[in-house]
Amino acid sequence: MNNLFIRKARLSDVEKIHELVNYYAEKRVMLARSRSALYEYIRDFAVIEKDDEIIAIGALHILWVDLAEVRALAVKEELKGQGIGKKLVEFFLEEAKELGISKVFTLTYQKEFFAKCGFTVIDKDNMPHKVWKECINCPKFPNCDEVCMEIDIKTDEL
Image (cartoon, rainbow, N blue to C red; front, side, top):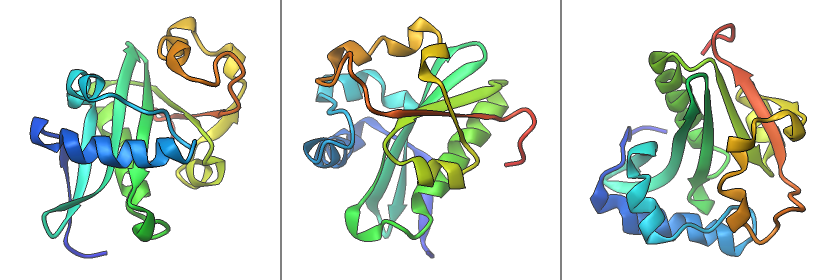
């Protein structure tokens, strides 16, 4: 797609991010996020714009010196399947690489998508406890049915 622009999110983007995240949360494929949480974590987020309209959002959340999570990845429904989400994942992997983070993971229902981005399925029980900090706010806790996937960005090509 032409005319796509990826950038870090701004405070003025919170309403659009909130709208897109909660659209998918209502479909039960993503955790809902409050506006206050979005303001708190705005520095984690990036957006993709097309013709000055936000069409995709996502976040890279740093958990530790060597670990980050891709979360809240969403593309407008009518634009899915066009490589837009993959562009955001690549943006986050490059950002993690620049920060010196060696592993990036995600908890997802979109296993095939993340596999195409180079992620592999791992046993989520082997993840450090700090990963589950936000899970207590999930209506599915403690019976999470998301798949945990990770990528080692030190050895994988971006």
